[in-house]
Image (cartoon, helix red, strand yellow):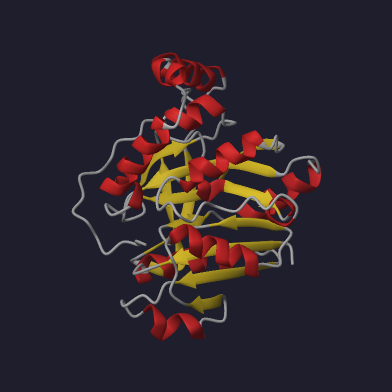
Length: 289
Protein backbone atom coordinates (compact mmCIF):
# COMPACT_ATOMS: atom_id res chain seq x y z
CA UNK A 1 0.00 0.00 0.00
CA UNK A 2 1.59 3.28 -1.12
CA UNK A 3 -0.73 5.87 0.49
CA UNK A 4 -2.96 5.94 3.56
CA UNK A 5 -5.26 8.97 3.82
CA UNK A 6 -7.10 9.49 7.11
CA UNK A 7 -10.22 11.65 7.36
CA UNK A 8 -11.70 12.55 10.76
CA UNK A 9 -15.44 13.06 10.49
CA UNK A 10 -18.22 14.49 12.64
CA UNK A 11 -21.45 15.93 11.26
CA UNK A 12 -19.87 16.79 7.92
CA UNK A 13 -21.73 14.43 5.57
CA UNK A 14 -22.13 16.81 2.61
CA UNK A 15 -18.46 17.84 2.64
CA UNK A 16 -17.23 14.31 3.42
CA UNK A 17 -18.77 12.99 0.21
CA UNK A 18 -16.73 15.51 -1.81
CA UNK A 19 -13.57 14.70 0.12
CA UNK A 20 -13.99 10.97 -0.52
CA UNK A 21 -14.55 11.54 -4.25
CA UNK A 22 -11.36 13.63 -4.49
CA UNK A 23 -9.28 10.84 -2.95
CA UNK A 24 -10.93 8.02 -4.90
CA UNK A 25 -10.00 9.34 -8.35
CA UNK A 26 -6.28 9.88 -7.65
CA UNK A 27 -5.21 6.83 -9.66
CA UNK A 28 -2.61 5.60 -7.16
CA UNK A 29 -2.45 2.66 -4.76
CA UNK A 30 -4.15 3.90 -1.59
CA UNK A 31 -6.52 3.30 1.27
CA UNK A 32 -8.86 5.97 2.58
CA UNK A 33 -9.65 5.55 6.26
CA UNK A 34 -12.61 7.56 7.56
CA UNK A 35 -12.93 7.86 11.33
CA UNK A 36 -16.45 9.06 12.09
CA UNK A 37 -17.39 9.97 15.65
CA UNK A 38 -20.95 8.59 15.48
CA UNK A 39 -22.33 11.53 13.52
CA UNK A 40 -26.07 12.12 13.83
CA UNK A 41 -26.43 13.72 10.39
CA UNK A 42 -27.03 10.51 8.45
CA UNK A 43 -23.36 9.72 7.81
CA UNK A 44 -23.72 6.31 9.46
CA UNK A 45 -26.43 5.32 6.98
CA UNK A 46 -24.21 5.50 3.90
CA UNK A 47 -20.56 5.62 4.96
CA UNK A 48 -20.17 1.90 5.90
CA UNK A 49 -21.51 0.96 2.47
CA UNK A 50 -19.16 3.18 0.44
CA UNK A 51 -16.63 0.78 -1.16
CA UNK A 52 -14.08 3.57 -1.66
CA UNK A 53 -13.31 3.89 2.05
CA UNK A 54 -12.54 1.91 5.17
CA UNK A 55 -15.10 3.29 7.61
CA UNK A 56 -14.76 3.18 11.38
CA UNK A 57 -17.69 4.63 13.29
CA UNK A 58 -16.85 5.01 16.96
CA UNK A 59 -16.72 7.62 19.68
CA UNK A 60 -13.44 9.49 20.03
CA UNK A 61 -11.96 12.26 22.15
CA UNK A 62 -11.82 14.78 19.32
CA UNK A 63 -10.42 15.31 15.84
CA UNK A 64 -6.80 14.51 16.64
CA UNK A 65 -7.72 11.33 18.50
CA UNK A 66 -9.63 10.31 15.36
CA UNK A 67 -6.59 11.09 13.19
CA UNK A 68 -4.30 9.08 15.47
CA UNK A 69 -6.70 6.13 15.41
CA UNK A 70 -6.67 6.21 11.63
CA UNK A 71 -2.88 6.44 11.49
CA UNK A 72 -2.54 3.43 13.79
CA UNK A 73 -4.84 1.45 11.49
CA UNK A 74 -3.04 2.55 8.33
CA UNK A 75 -0.80 0.37 6.17
CA UNK A 76 0.58 2.87 3.66
CA UNK A 77 4.15 4.01 3.13
CA UNK A 78 3.09 7.66 2.75
CA UNK A 79 0.54 9.07 5.18
CA UNK A 80 -1.65 12.16 5.35
CA UNK A 81 -4.85 13.39 6.87
CA UNK A 82 -7.52 15.26 4.97
CA UNK A 83 -10.46 16.92 6.71
CA UNK A 84 -14.02 16.66 5.44
CA UNK A 85 -13.94 20.21 4.07
CA UNK A 86 -10.74 19.57 2.10
CA UNK A 87 -9.98 17.87 -1.22
CA UNK A 88 -7.08 16.74 -3.36
CA UNK A 89 -6.67 18.18 -6.83
CA UNK A 90 -6.36 15.78 -9.80
CA UNK A 91 -3.10 13.77 -9.84
CA UNK A 92 -2.00 15.32 -6.54
CA UNK A 93 -0.89 12.05 -4.95
CA UNK A 94 1.05 11.02 -8.07
CA UNK A 95 3.08 14.21 -7.68
CA UNK A 96 3.63 13.46 -4.00
CA UNK A 97 4.71 9.92 -4.84
CA UNK A 98 7.22 11.18 -7.41
CA UNK A 99 8.59 13.71 -4.91
CA UNK A 100 9.23 11.13 -2.19
CA UNK A 101 10.84 8.74 -4.66
CA UNK A 102 13.15 11.53 -5.84
CA UNK A 103 13.96 12.62 -2.27
CA UNK A 104 14.45 9.52 -0.11
CA UNK A 105 16.01 11.63 2.66
CA UNK A 106 12.83 13.68 3.21
CA UNK A 107 10.39 12.45 5.87
CA UNK A 108 7.76 15.21 5.65
CA UNK A 109 6.77 17.13 2.53
CA UNK A 110 4.72 20.32 2.45
CA UNK A 111 2.96 21.15 -0.82
CA UNK A 112 0.84 24.17 -1.80
CA UNK A 113 -2.88 24.66 -1.30
CA UNK A 114 -5.65 26.99 -2.24
CA UNK A 115 -8.74 28.21 -0.45
CA UNK A 116 -12.19 28.14 -2.04
CA UNK A 117 -15.63 29.31 -0.93
CA UNK A 118 -18.55 26.94 -0.25
CA UNK A 119 -19.50 26.95 -3.94
CA UNK A 120 -15.96 25.96 -4.91
CA UNK A 121 -14.95 29.38 -6.26
CA UNK A 122 -11.33 30.43 -5.84
CA UNK A 123 -10.37 32.71 -2.95
CA UNK A 124 -6.57 32.57 -2.72
CA UNK A 125 -3.37 30.53 -2.81
CA UNK A 126 -1.54 29.21 0.25
CA UNK A 127 2.06 28.43 -0.69
CA UNK A 128 3.97 26.53 1.96
CA UNK A 129 7.19 27.63 3.60
CA UNK A 130 9.48 25.44 5.67
CA UNK A 131 8.32 26.04 9.24
CA UNK A 132 10.56 27.71 11.79
CA UNK A 133 10.32 27.15 15.53
CA UNK A 134 9.76 30.78 16.52
CA UNK A 135 7.00 31.53 14.03
CA UNK A 136 5.24 28.20 14.61
CA UNK A 137 5.24 28.83 18.36
CA UNK A 138 3.99 32.41 18.48
CA UNK A 139 2.90 33.32 14.95
CA UNK A 140 -0.71 32.10 15.38
CA UNK A 141 -0.76 30.85 11.78
CA UNK A 142 1.21 27.92 10.42
CA UNK A 143 3.37 28.36 7.34
CA UNK A 144 1.76 25.21 5.94
CA UNK A 145 -1.70 23.68 5.57
CA UNK A 146 -2.21 20.14 6.80
CA UNK A 147 -4.29 19.36 3.70
CA UNK A 148 -1.02 19.53 1.77
CA UNK A 149 1.19 17.78 4.33
CA UNK A 150 2.49 14.28 3.62
CA UNK A 151 4.85 12.12 5.68
CA UNK A 152 6.58 8.76 5.66
CA UNK A 153 5.46 5.87 7.83
CA UNK A 154 8.73 6.11 9.77
CA UNK A 155 7.38 9.21 11.47
CA UNK A 156 4.85 7.19 13.45
CA UNK A 157 6.52 3.77 13.53
CA UNK A 158 10.06 4.75 14.49
CA UNK A 159 9.62 8.26 15.88
CA UNK A 160 6.11 7.83 17.36
CA UNK A 161 5.21 11.41 16.38
CA UNK A 162 1.44 11.30 16.66
CA UNK A 163 -0.80 14.31 17.25
CA UNK A 164 -1.50 15.60 20.76
CA UNK A 165 -5.08 14.45 21.22
CA UNK A 166 -5.73 16.48 24.37
CA UNK A 167 -5.93 19.53 22.09
CA UNK A 168 -8.83 20.30 19.77
CA UNK A 169 -7.39 22.98 17.48
CA UNK A 170 -3.65 23.66 17.75
CA UNK A 171 -2.28 20.10 17.73
CA UNK A 172 -1.02 20.75 14.19
CA UNK A 173 1.28 23.49 15.50
CA UNK A 174 2.43 21.30 18.41
CA UNK A 175 3.11 18.46 15.93
CA UNK A 176 5.22 20.77 13.73
CA UNK A 177 7.18 21.87 16.79
CA UNK A 178 7.84 18.18 17.51
CA UNK A 179 9.15 17.73 13.96
CA UNK A 180 11.58 20.59 14.50
CA UNK A 181 12.71 19.37 17.92
CA UNK A 182 13.38 15.90 16.51
CA UNK A 183 15.32 17.32 13.53
CA UNK A 184 12.99 15.63 11.05
CA UNK A 185 14.05 16.22 7.46
CA UNK A 186 11.45 18.50 5.88
CA UNK A 187 10.96 19.38 2.23
CA UNK A 188 8.84 21.56 -0.04
CA UNK A 189 6.85 20.32 -3.02
CA UNK A 190 6.04 23.52 -4.95
CA UNK A 191 2.86 22.16 -6.54
CA UNK A 192 -0.80 22.77 -5.84
CA UNK A 193 -2.09 19.51 -4.41
CA UNK A 194 -4.93 20.42 -2.08
CA UNK A 195 -8.00 22.57 -1.50
CA UNK A 196 -9.38 23.96 1.75
CA UNK A 197 -13.02 25.08 1.77
CA UNK A 198 -13.96 28.15 3.77
CA UNK A 199 -17.34 26.86 4.93
CA UNK A 200 -18.03 29.52 7.55
CA UNK A 201 -17.95 26.86 10.25
CA UNK A 202 -14.29 25.81 10.20
CA UNK A 203 -12.91 24.86 13.60
CA UNK A 204 -10.07 27.38 13.50
CA UNK A 205 -12.63 30.21 13.55
CA UNK A 206 -14.17 29.15 16.86
CA UNK A 207 -13.40 30.47 20.39
CA UNK A 208 -11.63 27.30 21.52
CA UNK A 209 -9.05 27.72 18.76
CA UNK A 210 -8.27 31.22 19.99
CA UNK A 211 -7.96 29.98 23.59
CA UNK A 212 -5.57 27.18 22.60
CA UNK A 213 -3.46 29.55 20.48
CA UNK A 214 -3.20 31.93 23.41
CA UNK A 215 -2.16 29.09 25.73
CA UNK A 216 0.45 27.87 23.24
CA UNK A 217 1.87 31.38 22.93
CA UNK A 218 2.05 31.66 26.72
CA UNK A 219 4.36 28.62 26.83
CA UNK A 220 7.00 30.46 24.78
CA UNK A 221 9.87 32.15 26.62
CA UNK A 222 9.21 35.80 27.51
CA UNK A 223 11.98 37.02 25.22
CA UNK A 224 10.40 35.21 22.26
CA UNK A 225 6.97 36.68 22.98
CA UNK A 226 8.56 40.13 23.16
CA UNK A 227 10.24 39.51 19.80
CA UNK A 228 6.98 38.58 18.06
CA UNK A 229 6.96 41.62 15.70
CA UNK A 230 10.48 40.74 14.54
CA UNK A 231 9.53 37.06 14.12
CA UNK A 232 6.57 37.99 11.93
CA UNK A 233 8.68 40.40 9.89
CA UNK A 234 11.30 37.70 9.31
CA UNK A 235 8.59 35.24 8.25
CA UNK A 236 7.11 37.70 5.75
CA UNK A 237 10.56 38.52 4.39
CA UNK A 238 11.21 34.82 3.81
CA UNK A 239 7.93 34.53 1.94
CA UNK A 240 8.76 37.62 -0.11
CA UNK A 241 12.18 36.27 -1.10
CA UNK A 242 10.60 32.92 -1.99
CA UNK A 243 8.23 34.66 -4.40
CA UNK A 244 5.05 33.94 -2.46
CA UNK A 245 3.79 37.48 -3.00
CA UNK A 246 4.50 37.59 -6.72
CA UNK A 247 1.60 37.39 -9.19
CA UNK A 248 0.93 33.89 -10.54
CA UNK A 249 -0.30 33.16 -14.07
CA UNK A 250 -3.98 32.33 -14.70
CA UNK A 251 -4.90 28.67 -14.33
CA UNK A 252 -7.79 26.20 -14.15
CA UNK A 253 -8.62 23.75 -11.38
CA UNK A 254 -11.19 20.99 -10.97
CA UNK A 255 -12.90 19.95 -7.72
CA UNK A 256 -16.09 18.32 -6.52
CA UNK A 257 -18.83 20.68 -5.35
CA UNK A 258 -22.18 20.35 -3.65
CA UNK A 259 -23.85 20.99 -7.03
CA UNK A 260 -21.47 18.58 -8.79
CA UNK A 261 -20.72 15.83 -6.23
CA UNK A 262 -20.11 13.06 -8.78
CA UNK A 263 -17.96 14.88 -11.32
CA UNK A 264 -15.25 17.47 -10.91
CA UNK A 265 -16.32 20.97 -11.86
CA UNK A 266 -13.72 23.15 -13.57
CA UNK A 267 -13.04 26.72 -12.50
CA UNK A 268 -10.87 29.37 -14.15
CA UNK A 269 -8.72 31.74 -12.08
CA UNK A 270 -7.91 34.88 -14.03
CA UNK A 271 -6.12 36.71 -11.22
CA UNK A 272 -4.49 34.44 -8.63
CA UNK A 273 -3.74 36.10 -5.30
CA UNK A 274 -2.03 35.34 -2.01
CA UNK A 275 -4.36 37.64 -0.08
CA UNK A 276 -6.72 35.74 2.18
CA UNK A 277 -9.93 37.57 2.98
CA UNK A 278 -12.40 35.69 5.12
CA UNK A 279 -15.94 35.48 3.83
CA UNK A 280 -18.77 36.87 5.91
CA UNK A 281 -20.72 33.62 5.90
CA UNK A 282 -23.52 32.39 8.08
CA UNK A 283 -22.41 29.12 9.70
CA UNK A 284 -23.24 26.16 7.49
CA UNK A 285 -23.72 22.53 8.35
CA UNK A 286 -19.97 22.20 8.11
CA UNK A 287 -17.75 19.59 9.71
CA UNK A 288 -16.95 19.83 13.36
CA UNK A 289 -15.48 17.69 16.10
